[in-house]
Amino acid sequence: MNDQMDSEQINTGHPARPSPDVPFTASDLPIDGEGRIYHLQVKPENIAPNILLVGDPGRAEFIGSTFLRDLEFEHEHRGLVTITGISEVTGEQATIISPVRTTAATSGIGTPSLEIVVNELVALNEIDFETRTRKADFPRLHVLRVGTSGALQASTKLGTSIITSYAIGMDNTGLYYESPYADDVCKRLERELALVVDRSMSENSRFVGKIHPYVARAEPILADALVEAAAELGVPAKRGLTVSASGFFSPQGRDVSRVKPSAPDLDRIFSEYEPGVDSQRIENMEMESSFLLHFLGGLGYWAGAICAGIAN
Image (cartoon, rainbow, N blue to C red):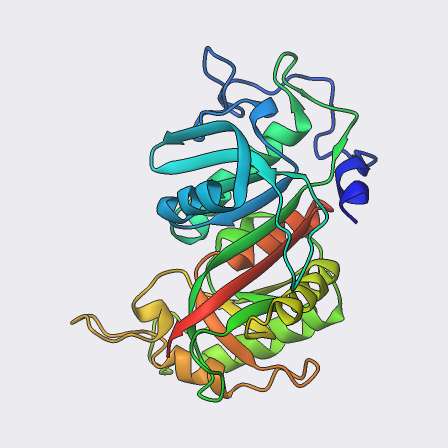
């Protein structure tokens, strides 16, 4: 599979811009004097097509020092750590085809930060920095979010890794990108969940009808591979739906502020909702997967997420 992953190219048959030969301006695509993308401060050659994306910079450093060898690039800027090397993991329980050139990168907290990082990773992959124009073809990216999350189902033991099948975006970052529905399930869930959220709010709330979830699907091949790998390694894992909240406190059902939540008890409401997806439930809440799957899926890249449930 990795040979296919490394060699497969994406053709820009439907370019995002009407005039692909017109260079991107410095304001649209900030590149510094050393040829590095603005926020990550890395060059195109520093990034591998296989990317492990984490929120915590310390976690990126841990992955780099523990699971990557022959490190070719290590950099930190604005708390965003980027490490590229060779992933080579073999053992009695499982064998991962290797070596695989891999990048571990930090997304920061929440979809606004992740939107910046993922756009820059895509630009590094797709754009010729010399001409500032999009390449005719480029490798397909495979991006896997590895993180932690709040668990929503009492029946799921804490520490279980939740493998995301669909992500429910309660943030609004994805609403600025016209990514198409991955399937009819996304469309149905969006419609149903908008009603669920509205019914949870007071009719006197100024925000009734203004919180509209969007739904994205993880790449099924990646999700299946994660399920298979977890089984082979003996790691407790479960496939389910993931809610990506726009923040940590009220957006995830925490009521600690003197300003009351407009949509109270969102954690309970999502835990009780029956999504009708292969007997799966909404298993966890975090703050990044929705935009990752929505944006990269719209580009034809493979994106997935696996997050341990650490509290409920």
